[in-house]
Image (tube, rainbow, N blue to C red; front, side, top):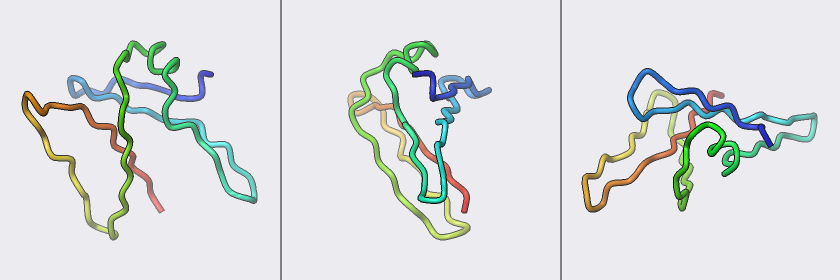
Length: 81
């Protein structure tokens, strides 16, 4: 446990979540969600879906905001090649 660093961002309700990446010549592994790590950071939520997409260079795909009754939180992963 304790493999995920959670930092509160300047925007209300936004957190930067940085997993520890374990890598070698074969590739890498990272735990992208751990309920205990989130709880330890004060984030107690029901996590039910995780999506990943890839866009071409220079394209930023955005999540669409929803209001009640369809409101939900998003987890966005940003990677750099």
